[in-house]
Image (cartoon, rainbow, N blue to C red):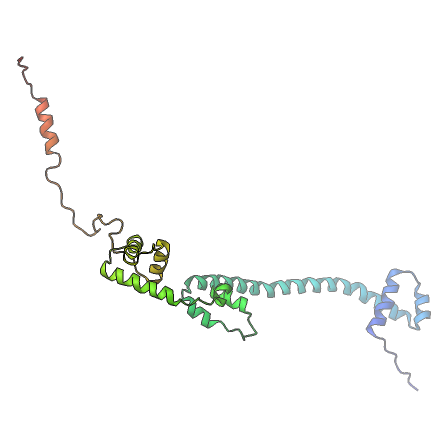
Length: 228
């Protein structure tokens, strides 16, 4: 009758090969303890020694492969960051439009991150403008009446005019703030009004130098001194 060949697991082979490589036990002791043949002990020990170098080489190759795989990812992340910074500079949409783009219920991107992508402060997102009171509207109407009659008046002269008409002193800072809200200002010449236009033609001064030449000619002439 043929005997069935006994098979051993990889863990068992590694254990026996490691014990044989250490040399704590002799080959006979290993054969007796594990019920194996001498040829198996030598074969497994040889496989352990030969495979150790390949194990380290495969680990090195794995590290190189991981670096090769992650390098394009880091490059892509850097490129996307540069493009995002460029997009923030070019994105000059009004604040109200940016606030409409925020999606609070979109769980994939947080509200903080959405504000960062749009270049919008979170305080601006949650800000609620204070409505103008009826008193402020009445004052703005009076300012508009004075400004319509005298569009060259600034905040100081409008405050003085309202003080003369209404009797009570008017705060110039308040008038200035309301005029800023209304988008009006006194019509007056601005800076650099005397500068010519760059395309304006400049004509040469034909008499330049003639007067100096005439004075030099007079002084160079011998004049006889005649005493009085």
